[in-house]
Image 1: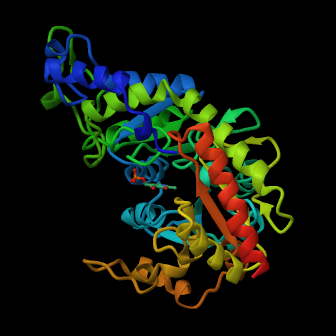
Image 2: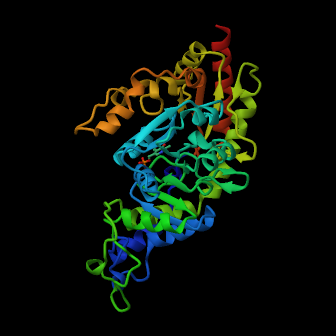
Image 3: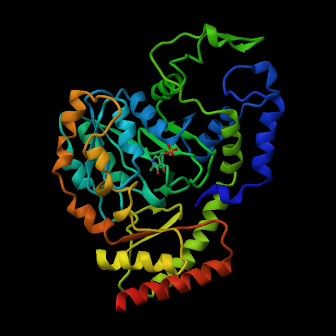
Length: 407
Ligand SMILES: Cc1ncc(COP(=O)(O)O)c(C=O)c1O
């Protein structure tokens, strides 16, 4: 999956442009830049590629989620529904605003189960946040219908599925807001970075200002001869610093232009592996919602039970097949191991609202999600494999998993 596997001259050229004029900050210094505005350019190219009206680049995917929610006015005491299978960033970003993450079950798509979402709605619910895990997507039509019925904001986290589409539309462009991570291990990378996507002009203005101390970059501070005068910019509301640097944006610019190439390589590798694994009758592949086209960054499938999945994960590792994740036992991606969240271990006192709002995690069980994640293995698809390597990997996987099913 990670774009860093194929770094080359294009990335170097974009970074050198920045180093040669020395302006590493995305705002201001107009006269020194020789016309290089890497962050601004990457925002425009993301808008074209992902078919969305507005993009705000920021420092990370985690920041993107906080900024997206803040832009829609979500904060203290509001509830945001999110899946139990995701990355820890999801609840971190919600809690940073004083809002309450409401964790609910996933289904065989490995993303939010619309029925579980419906059951979790209360008077405090403000947003539903599907996380498009491992290159595929949630049932966005079903989630959008729930949002429409209950007047909720739909925030897509498509950090792990950049390049995937649903009913012809790029993920991240469908909800009220979309979030991308562009960190080092994503399909396209800035090194570190993230993006907020939206078709809503107000949310875009909020995201722009909030990610730079509340600065109004559009105000009268624009001076034709010196460009933006940051000291003269007003602050319509409070913000923080989640800016991306020009160096990071430069890397992302070169990577974005290769997104189609990366997805095509992944698809080729994915298809070889999937065809081979399809010969094992006990394997069931993850469900992709109707109209969905994956980014092919992972191949995810279910084995008959937890014991076989554990055995197969160990056996694959021993056979030298790397990058096959059994998230049931993983500390980062599944609720089972998030003791620090369940026990509310923080460096600073949490608000009474959050403490009260997260009490449910002490007792709630997620039997349906255990059923799917316990049996699931998700295999990373790499860009740098040769075709021979993929074919030999497929053979090894079939042999190894078949053995685990017999013994
Ligand atoms: C689904 C998801 N959301 C958000 C993030 C956070 O991104 P970042 O590392 O850029 O903060 C990640 C990172 O792995 C992720 O997988």
